[in-house]
Image (cartoon, rainbow, N blue to C red; front, side, top):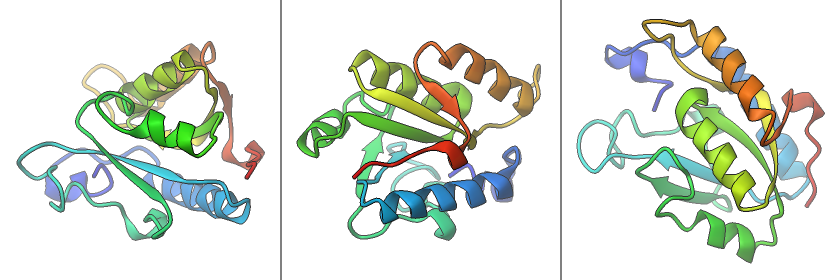
Length: 165
């Protein structure tokens, strides 16, 4: 959704091309390690962010494969009112590598919730992004949230992430 928001009058995503490239490489490494991949899509019940609408779709370079898990969520917290925790448990997942958009909303909330469930959490620092706000630049927002999230996750560049099957 955020990747095309600018095409519909929204703000551009900070370092969008870099985010897509790094996330694509991270996904490829996860697939090579045969680690399960879970996509969580923020969705609204109606409007342009509802299922199958323009602002809902995942861009091709990072699109899910048929074997990946797809979770639809309606809240910033990827665990709230979804099957994510159950699916992770059923697949023996004990650690999560989190990436996504927006660092200051969904990413922040999901990292904290994953930590509270006892997962070992790694945040791929170059695979998160957000938009400028009226008060702060996206770069400032990301830096601030990564600093705060150090209490809940290891913050590391995607090149340092090691996947286990």
